[in-house]
Image (cartoon, rainbow, N blue to C red):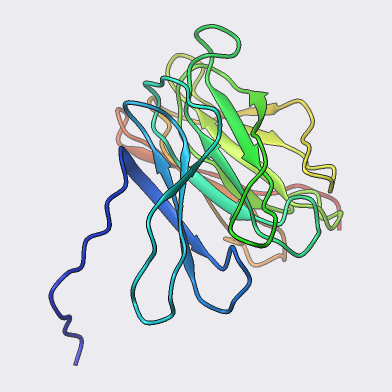
Length: 208
């Protein structure tokens, strides 16, 4: 009837935003949690299939951050194992936001993060195949004074090219989402602009 039992809490230091996927390929959904202060990392909680989760295991070299710690999941190197991309971390280069990609091993573990620089501020990421080449790409908002969204095209091996930016109307671009808003079979982008009180839709112009 739409009701819920009492909550169960699972500790994660600095938990901010999360995503769910089967990271150890056992058929049970697991959790990937992007942590914020005091350190930006990725916490993985493996599910038992009965609504419970094991203790958090943390991945990624710790870094201090003031940007929102957001997270996306996708198979970025096309090995059939879910990987993680997370935003946040003003450290490389100095005073610049970055995007960290951690490749999964299919057992609930992840390799060391690879960093891709972004603009100052903003939030995201979201994953989709924007150029329809069969390889997942990433989009991340870069708010603040730049007020754009950045698309990084994937190489299918877990790497991403240099960002291409697209302006959005307003100020304070927030977390991006992806959907086919004009039903042409191509993933489009939407982002809210918090301080301007509007949302921006960017329709995909990739050739058929």
